[in-house]
Amino acid sequence: MYEIVSKEVLNEAVELMEIHAPYVARKCEAGQFIIVRVDEEGERIPLTIADYDREKETVQIIYQVVGYSTQLLSKLQVGDSVHDFVGPLGQPAPLHKLDHVIGIAGGVGAAPLYPQLRKLHEMGVKVDVIIGGRSKDFVILEDKFREFCNNVYIATDDGSKGTKGFVTTVLTDLIDKGEKFDEVIAIGPLIMMKNVVNITKPLNIPTSVSLNPIMIDGTGMCGGCRVTVGGETKFACVDGPDFDGFEVDFDECIKRQGLFKQEEKVESDHKCKIGRG
Ligand code: NAD
Ligand code: FES
Image 1: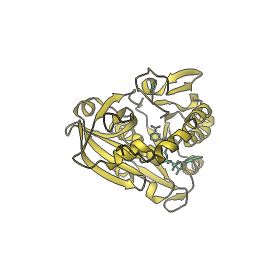
Image 2: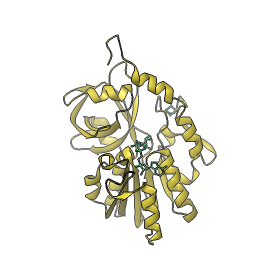
Image 3: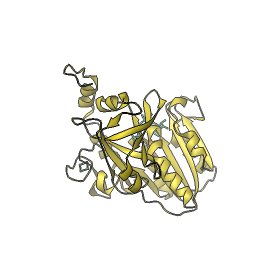
């Protein structure tokens, strides 16, 4: 069992939990993920590691309360425990010691982006970030990014904070003003990452993206998380989750992501009559 040592509500849909998980905390690197099961019969929830503290032996996860299983997770409080917390899974993000890198976070994509940018800063890279959200309440981790980023740009769809528009609006403005980036790391909705690549690819600015397709076992056995990268089938859980954005077949990812929308809604709306949830 893995105890919840702190919990924070970041906005109406997103929560942060810090979990005591000594093995994962000792080994994990930026970019890797864990699979959590709330109880013995629970569904496996893959979540990217948002932060870790090797001394406290804790790992932070940030999740959107969207379906039945994340609702169960959300009901737990400090002092409660989750049944399984398996990891670290996946590959550490490929981080390069360049001069200037910009991270682009869409909504909860800020969670996996944070440890990657912090690591780059520790490596001596000048780091900027663009954080996007539907409105100001959906812009998360701004203060944490401000601790080490040279520039923090905010974009909101409704203009309630920062630039009115998408993260891509800000990226285009910066490039038009003559800013030079050696690499872009974009994490957020697939359509956002696809549109970032549509900007960076013609300019040949290397772009890393993080894919989180449907995952079941998280160990390369089930094939659920398959994606096409550079014309080859890859498994996001063992080959990723970070990939070269120029090579990702985003249209296929978007199509596959929509496959189980109806089932997820039924599960989320389900009112259990046998005592679970
Ligand atoms: P959202 O739909 O509210 O979008 C967040 C921001 O992304 C927007 O504010 C905007 O700036 C940008 N965006 C959205 N649509 C865009 C478009 N068409 N063009 C350019 N930019 C666009 O995001 P959310 O509800 O917080 O969802 C976050 C997404 O991130 C989820 O789909 C989740 O699957 C994904 N995610 C990915 C990872 C990962 O590791 N890859 C981790 C966590 C979350
Ligand atoms: Fe099963 Fe990746 S989750 S192969």
